[in-house]
Length: 413
Image (cartoon, rainbow, N blue to C red; front, top):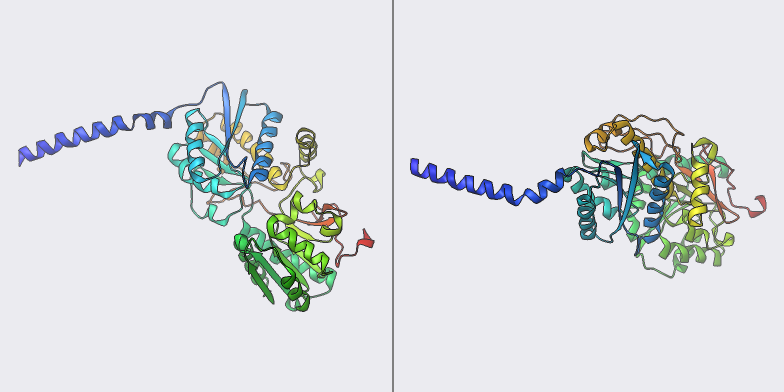
């Protein structure tokens, strides 16, 4: 028995030594410190491909924030954006940036990158702030070094249930218990429709018309005709570019204008929607993140950000750029507060943050819950209306710059 124990111990010792030496490259990479002379910040996601426009809005926003801030803790900020269009590319690019000393990462537009990185930041000892993705599933687990800056789609659904009935009663004279609401969506964004339905249900509203359809649908004649025949008071569409553009054009072609169209973000607050022209987009209401067209006096630095962005890139920033720019400035502030480019200290600084509304260009307050969700995000969301081809914030009262026209009447502009 003694011989067997000794043999077992020797074998275990050999295995242990082999394991230690096999892990040396990983351990070395994991404990490697960044260059003491710089502060490194990275982003990984689509810069080319399907999500390129949103991905570049995020990249541009971080780039501009780095340019504006210049230094943190008296050290130069080094920024790098890595292009990745699937999870395997995200992981590969993360490992590459990590090996170069990057420990702080910002989230990007498409959620697949966040999902891939969530499982890595704690393991590697990095930290990440998701600034532009709204998937609910991103915040269902308690991940030590992952934080979520912007509101989840569930928050949008809740706000839909709060805001829309108020507008219907004030401008249409219809109480919520009598509202005839239609909810439509393409199957790629059904999760958005689910959030809207949940918000409406919480408000005591059940849609009288619901229809989901394939995301590649092109002919909307029958759907528009069915909506016309259903005598809808409020239409709530959840649509992307591929279906939202032909749907809206078909509405105009068939002369269908519901008393109120109240969209759940997506294409309805994007440049490709506005590019359709005033005759197509005017009158549509849309629930959105805060963006550069809200009251600029209410959000510190918003005017400078919006005009600097336009001067540098040629157009006004989107909602996602506004959120990312603000989140990046916040991250720089937290590194300063931590006093070091040290993940544990930065995390502690973020967890203790309690910042009131108006201190960053996106206006919202900043305070993180136990799941590292910013509970100040989405309070309030913007209600915008397209007027003369421009998305004008007409709600909420804190940040609006104009008044809604409901039902739509272009003569009242």
